[in-house]
Image 1: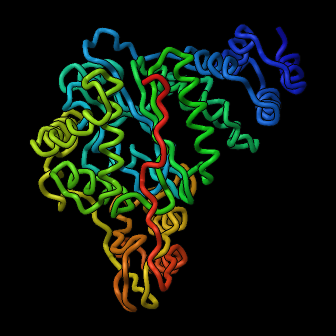
Image 2: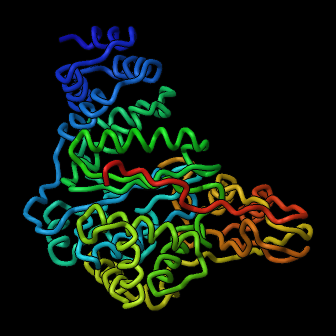
Image 3: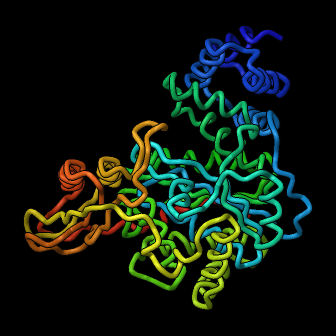
Length: 438
């Protein structure tokens, strides 16, 4: 079999066989196909697509191209959640211990942030001492003990995806839906899961800025997951404005802890958490319906069980569990700056993408993967869409360590803020739920 023949075949919009897909994935993983041929094939896929059978095969073969977690000895159902990314989306930090407190096993493999979106691993590493780079034996031991572990992917996991992901970024093929789906699900399949809940974001701060494309993406993810024998549900959620009240690594840890302690001042964050948690419990077999799962999650927050599980997770992974009781132990930026409303009116919009760029200027995110983070930097949003403001009211407080960064971020934040004479209709955070035959 020659790689050149497979490039030509996909260029002609023909479908690959399972054997051809296996050859492509292995050639990417072991380096036998040069980058220029892989790049040509990626462009052919971006232009002509892959059908569901091809996408299922590609996902399976990329997962099989390296090592996999071996978790079959665990008795409870194994379930994870994946978000397509957004601004202020620190839900995983609260969701993983919440689902574990309900009796599920949650091996949550996460990533780092780049550009305007944040990364769960960066947020966790804002906790002093917290370790995310764990060997498989330690992950399994922790899952056996407390049912939850949040960790980074190892270099041996789905190496075909790692190579193709890097080339996609350099060849303008990032937005190809079959490549997106196979990339996301190959890493999840390598976790040896029983079920997966997908949080598919849509709006100004999301990868899928348009709702129609988000729905197509969600359908493709669910269909491919089921083709792999993995139970899945996709929850399409709004990312037109940032989720919750905080943007920034340590600040989003604080928000997750406050919610697990019963705080309700971030209703959109809480709604997202409870809906995702309800579906995790339903797919994991802990309850009959997602609504029952939601009620169970609410009870686990009220009882303090989810909060205690979070503290256990922090302790097991080398972090200081005092962060759950004393936010003063979290990193803090050296300076702050209030952003004031330039005029009176109602907040009619708060662009999540632009707020994410403001956080980037503060040092809370990365423009390049090698950039350092200021874990204490970020934004506290005092007013969000639908709120009334008067001229001079503080609409946000910025935290950073650079005076120039604070000034530039304040200008950027005001670009995100849309004020009007009349209140806007606030979009519900959950737009649609896709779970065929659930």
